[in-house]
Length: 266
View 1 (cartoon, rainbow, N blue to C red):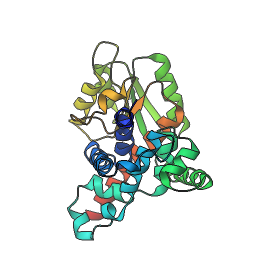
View 2 (tube, one colour):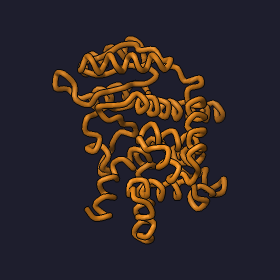
View 3 (tube, helix red, strand yellow):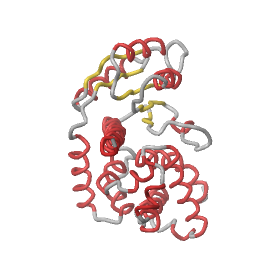
View 4 (spheres, rainbow, N blue to C red):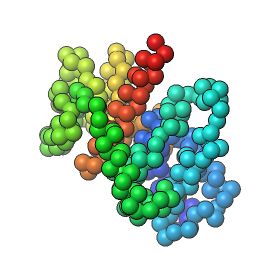
């Protein structure tokens, strides 16, 4: 397989990482586009290691952390969309956390991507875990038609300190549960038991109130093309507990950051 084919193969996962890092499909995909432009102009940036995926993420990280992207004046930053400005101040620990816990990179590969040593990666991941876990407990609605998966998710999020208000198997059940008690976060499967869609259920709920949503799917590549409006937060089935923890932390981080900004400007 050629290098360009390998890059294409890994693009969905770079989009997933970029969206989790920025909290937005638009902002995340913009950084991915900038990465691809760099690869066109500097093809030698790939192939520096035996791992093309790590090289791809390393180029992205160089752009993400570069002064040319993140060093604008206050006036320029003020004119940027909120999710981009927030993404620009994302600390290194969160990058290490997502690379390890969401994307599954080894400590060695994460160190190459971030241009630090392995011991620093460990310290960064530990630091991020402590920061992201602080003061983020919330009420969670699970929309999932597979009983065993729903039980696993419920046990996992409760182990993280959250409270599950209910498990919905269909679009109708989800709307009723959310109407009885509004959740602070939603975990939603995309294909539900009665043939309805978790996407449709969430869209119905978002008409009445704002809430961060994480979608769960066995086919994440279908929702990471960058060709249409797509979820910002995705978990692939079968999922690992660390993946769920990482994405929940990211979603709640952006929600709380937005609320703090609103409180400061109120």
